[in-house]
Every structure is written in structure tokens, then in C-alpha cells.
Image 1 (tube, rainbow, N blue to C red):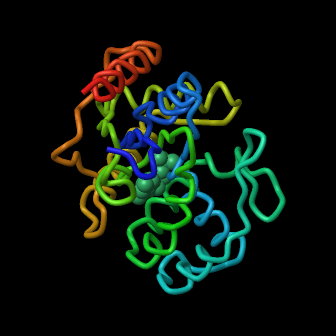
Image 2 (cartoon, rainbow, N blue to C red; image 1 turned 135 degrees about the vertical axis):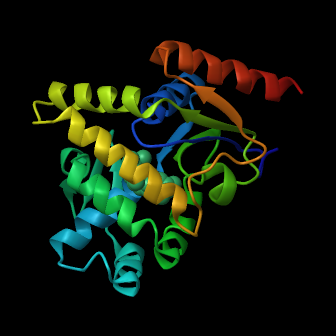
Amino acid sequence: MTFKGISVIAIDGPSASGKGTVTQRVAEKLGFHYLDSGALYRLLALAAMRQQVSLDDEAGLAKLASGMDIRFEQGFIWLDGESVDDAIRTEECGNGASRVAAYPAVRAALLDLQRAFRKAPGLVADGRDMGSVVFPDAALKIFLTASAEVRAERRYKQLMEKGMRANIEQILHDIRQRDERDSARSVAPLQMCADASLLDTSSMTIVEAVDEVLARFRQVCVR
Ligand code: DC
């Protein structure tokens, strides 16, 4: 199904499941736009920490979310005119993002911003509630996951490659805690929606996962 003829592929799933990389590559292959919705929650956590807005202050965070000066340009993410790609990828920002994302007022404040990414010729969006809340009419909904251990290993390797210090036990602990918080919250919890199809990448390479998403998209297009 399309909105003004613009197809959306919604890719939801837990942290470090590889959905960011898969989503980006699927978007590139199709020439579609790309939305990394988790980055918005990370940006909000970073902005709150910088402006000393408490992560317990739902109304203050929602206000901050509506007024954030953010841009996705030239492959980089900008906050208040500063490139913040590395700053938002820290574990601290990830944990902060998971906390701010639990507030209904914050999620509501970020809804229109996310929907504005739907532009021709199409969009591939990754997050937790892309198929259930933000783009319920998405042409294809994928729930992409992998075991917590595989995800911890992937995140560990990513951090090491970036020269960041990391402890795999701590990462596994954080991943489990974040899964728990993201799944247990009352608004838009992390869960596979009824019309999504499961893709478990525990024993798949990125290339195999990308090919699988493209194959499933081709199938819905010919229907
Ligand atoms: O995908 P990520 O790890 O960058 O997401 C960071 C946090 O933001 C994650 O803990 C859950 C939250 N999130 C969300 O609640 N809804 C989304 N659509 C995307 C992310």
C-alpha cells in the first residue's frame, strides 16, 4: 500500500540487530530515502544532557524535541550546527535515548518529523515502531532481530573499529536491559506487529540480510 504513491519499507527490531546497516544498504540499492529514527531519540538524549534538561522531565524533553535544530545532510547528522555522529553513538547516549523514548509526549513530538522523511521515490525507515505507529501503511514490514549474544558481539566489534573502549559483558548487560525497557514501556513498545515478517540475522551476513529484504520487497511489489 502506498501514500501518494510513495512506498515505505519499515524495518523494526532491537538494538544492535544490524538493522541500521541493512536499512541503509536497502535504501541505497533502491535509490530510496533513509530514516534512522533511533538517531532522533539519541539526538534528544544528547541535547538534553548538553542543556541540562533532566531525563526524568517528560514535558521539558518534549519541548526540547519540538525545537531541536537537527539536520541530516551529506551523510552526517548535525545538532545545533555541529556534526554529532560519534557523540550520539556512545553507550551513554544509547541508554539515554532508551529512557527518553519511553515518554508518550516525546514520541508524539517526534512523529511529524519522522513522517516528513516520506518522499519520492520511497523510504526505508528503521526503528522500533516504524510499522506499528509511524508508517502503519508501509508496503513491507520487517522485524529484524538476532540473539542478544550475537548483537553484543557486533556492537563490541563496531566500537573497537572506531577505537572506542568497550567491555563485552557490559555491552551484553546493557543490551538486555535496553531490550527489557524498550519492550516493557506502555507506548509503542518494541514488538513484532501482526503484519510484519520476521528476519533473524543471527547466522546471516549483512549481504544476505539485504538480499532477503529486497526479495521480500519484490514479492510485495508484484502482488
Ligand atoms: O536504534 P537505536 O539503538 O539507535 O535506538 C536508540 C533508542 O531509541 C533505543 O533504545 C530505543 C529508542 N527508539 C525507539 O523507541 N523508537 C524508535 N523508532 C527508534 C528508537
